[in-house]
Amino acid sequence: MSTVIRTSSLSTRWRHLPLLLSHLYLEVEYFMPHNSTTEADYKLIHEAMSDLIKLVGAFLASPRRESSVRILSLRVRLITNLLLDIGKLVCNSVDSGKLKNLELEIPTVKNIYDSDETDMREHARSLMFFFDSSPRLFGCLTKLFLYNASFTEPDMHRLLLSCEQLQNLKLHDCDIGYLSVLKMDLPNSKLRALQLVSCSFERVQLTRLPKLVQLHCKHWNSETFPVSFNFVPCLDEVKFCTATSDDTRFKITELLGDTANVQVLTLNFHGGKASILLSLLFTIHEEKCFYN
Image (cartoon, rainbow, N blue to C red; front, side, top):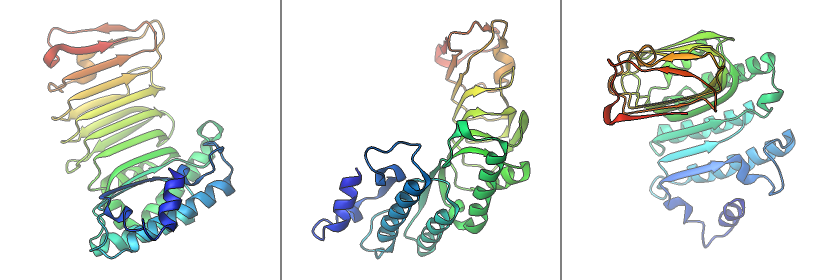
């Protein structure tokens, strides 16, 4: 992929072809040497990010009548000054009406397993600095994947509230403090898909998410189910995946509450011996219930 990108960027004969794309997807890994790994050193990642920014700038600098790109999807790394450069490019394109939707995935440079609480708090501060410097960028976000960050509760709420177009959110190794409670009361939210992976929340309260369709939870520290539901009328698919102790007991009715529209429930305990208590008062439409 990196060879194609570099070649098409250099060739005058092919230069117009990428402009015909309506959805441009780029990963920083495309710009790294073939023998590099995801744990490449900072200098290598910095150079790859710089190359990605140059290409994005070339795409977005094209006159609107020549470019068909309306959705920009980027997987980048958390390097603050370079993210600010991306923010300027995107905001200019949003203001001109050229770019309609943005999808961002922002892994940290430092490995999740090598990061401590200090690192996670610093990652969150860097993300919020990016957020505060590029508010129009977050206003057009439809997809956001965040990793390895420990936010303050007000910052997390402000971030979620400001992403007015957000439809797909993934939090991987994120929290607002160990075994904290995250309340998602977003009555005007357009969020349709929520993924929580290895987060340290004791519980996530989905108070009001009127358009949420899909919820996936993978690995959690709480001894009970990590999510509680209030007003989620469109919830269709729920998936929980974690290891359990032999005496873990779950009651489906207490888990899903009044979410009567769930079509698919998947429970995967990685071979653990969890006791599933099914109530006769709860019916999953089309009888699609899977547990392992």
